Length: 358
Image 1 (cartoon, one colour):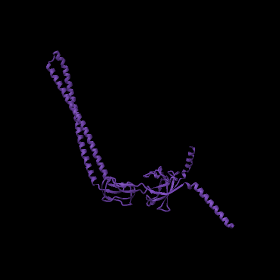
Image 2: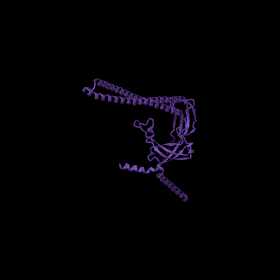
Image 3: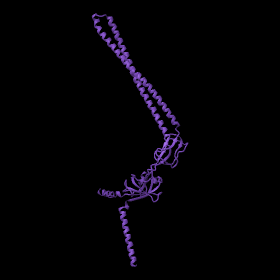
Image 4: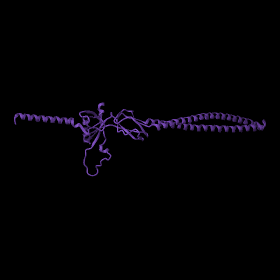
């Protein structure tokens, strides 16, 4: 081999060793802390819009995939029956209030009767006291013969009459008070009837408002199942609203990748539908369990033969995307996620030190 080719060979070998050294240094300082997976999809908290009351659909104000704003009218249900109930409830309020006013007027009269009965009882008590004093004054005089016995007898009779009159006035007063108590109970019952009628009116008014189904959030219409003329029941799903501003990523990392993954760490997201475009994100949360643990039938590895399978842990990634990108991004799209876990690399040494001390 000529000296020239020998020098070329040694130079190539040196470059290869240098490249390997640089690559190894990069992997040890950076690369080993970057965790990537393509087992990830875009997600959004979809809102299913359902009917709150029964009736025929008279209008559908939106079409499939149409953008809507929060509070925008979506569906109208025939309000005829609800308006009848509302009118009946309003008439019930008027009737209940009239009854309550009549009871209140009667109660006022009864209270006035109590005042009159108390005055009559006081007068009867005064008359009895006067008659008692006269009898007490004439009785010694009659015993001494200074006054005739007939006058004492007349005064005694007047005393008995006054006492009987007092008892009658007391009974009338008691009856008036009992009537006031009875009317007070009737007034409370009438007030309760008014409140019940008002609640029925409020319920009917709310049902009338519910005949106009509005969008609870802004987004786009999906899986529209409602049609004009359709009879719906409470709970019938009409359509779904997919928010366009609250997209996030669910990335299923292998259990060997999440040891140093913490909320707040930066992430890079690449969407298959937009090649060459990268989105920034951050780790929002890590699911407290593998996907298998939350499946309908969790695995039971304690029976039969066992084959170890690397499990996946769902990680929620908050996505940062502009308005133009959100017009394209939709839930269910495939993405690739890379998370930088370098911020937690010191925790690995801390965990090892902690375990060595035990």
